[in-house]
Length: 359
Ligand SMILES: Cc1ncc(COP(=O)(O)O)c(C=O)c1O
Image (cartoon, rainbow, N blue to C red; front, side, top):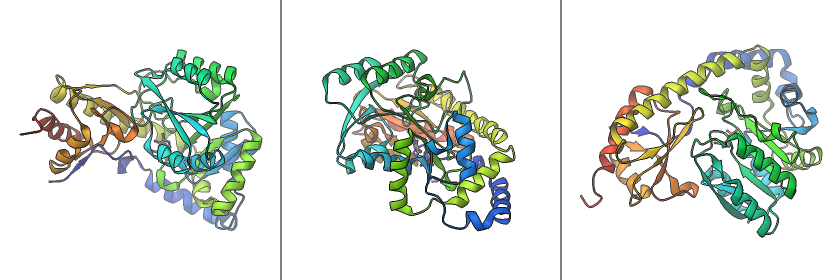
């Protein structure tokens, strides 16, 4: 039986603009090969830095391009190694592992359907020692798909200002909204003050180009750039130049529209299937963009145990506990699976949920 993966938080193959990127890569090598095939500045390919800087209304020197945004996260975490960092519970598991590996004291703050709980953040900032930063994914969060409400965005920004707290806003999914109104980013609401913004072309163009970026205060940019130089000498300019060519040609917006449609169809297929097969047993949210939704099964369920049976039955997901979530929760990615397979995947899963463990 072909396994159906709701575990893979990656784009479906048809989301990738393969032909267009092939054309962009050829064009940049032909036009600017002596630059993009050589070593370059650790800050990244200058025309792309300029494009991103303009989009965010900052000087190009404040943009650090990295080999994917997770690489930038590693640099930031290294910079604050050994400190205390606040995160959401649940949150993306890779940053958690990176932080713990660097001896960071990770303090997880509760969240609900509206995102991070600002009261909990306030209490933590008043009581504990000062954290180096708060790591948050306010829009279509990985793993829950939740989005921080506008009121809460304002509160978080106010708290950052009042407590001199640095906020890292990780926003790879904001542009893949396929429904509803866009929310201002924390970076925008704060006028750039106290907020470091990171994003990536992994979800809007392709993860294989490995182009992520950070918008930083000048001094932090220089410090993280120094960490980049000592790690990989030069970023992969060819990927950055290819993305820049993609943007320059005006291919970005039409591609985004295409990707949003592909994701919406998948999300709808998953919502329909959940309603049909798990409507009485489980709860889930209805994300308006991004890759994931959050499934909450009856309290007595242990999704790590369920996963073992699910794999044998040909369907996979990631247990919520892997992200610091409750044992009965799970992350379902709708981004990867073909729409016509989503229903079968949910059917396989639902059959196991309804079956007592002992059976
Ligand atoms: C919230 C979040 N941040 C960062 C990343 C890493 O993205 P990149 O491919 O740019 O390293 C991901 C990837 O899934 C993600 O979900």
